[in-house]
Image 1 (cartoon, rainbow, N blue to C red):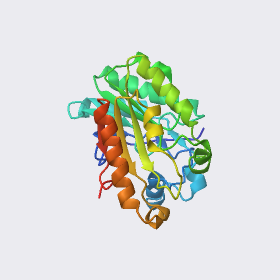
Image 2 (image 1 turned 135 degrees about the horizontal axis):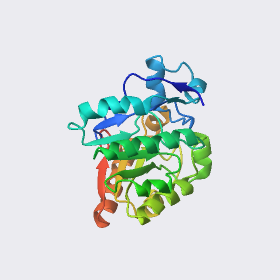
Image 3 (image 1 turned 60 degrees about the horizontal axis):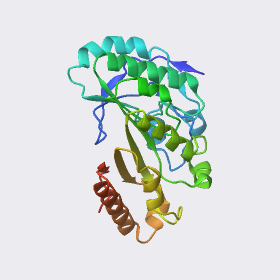
Length: 252
């Protein structure tokens, strides 16, 4: 695959539930069409001109060398490092990216730095051999494969994502699920309780509404819908002893 060189790796994120983050890949082959916020930002700042260019990921070949320089300077400030907020660390079908992600996690863990992972790919069971302070998560907004093929065309099938997450849970790892960006019923009719039951083993759930899509506001009762869905997630988590976070702007 194509590679790039970066000048920096670790930086403080503005995401509400994040601390530091690392994005060691530019672009994402998953091609999500919600639309993808990361792709919109990349186009805005000139890192990708088109959807097609964004879908051709480039790996930062010097990521480990940059970390060797940055970790000593920042490790006393870092509570955790998220992989990733503007790309996918276990991009489906890209073994080079997965291998680099594991090397990065190993390097950070060696300095007692906790890592939090989020993917629409397959979490490898090798992650269970790393620090059990790490947290491993998947994005999941449906169980309908037709919807996935339309909106997340190059991602891992939903049930495969869940199975890989469950395997890490069974191995004693901390696991979580991001139910974001969750769609309105005019985009797909589905029962949120079915999704919650499919992930009833995980330790934490984050829920957030779909943004940047005009179909959401075309749905007459979209505010009430997201309020009700958020309350359903909260109730599920409280009844089952799970941590949860509702993204800002989801409840109105």
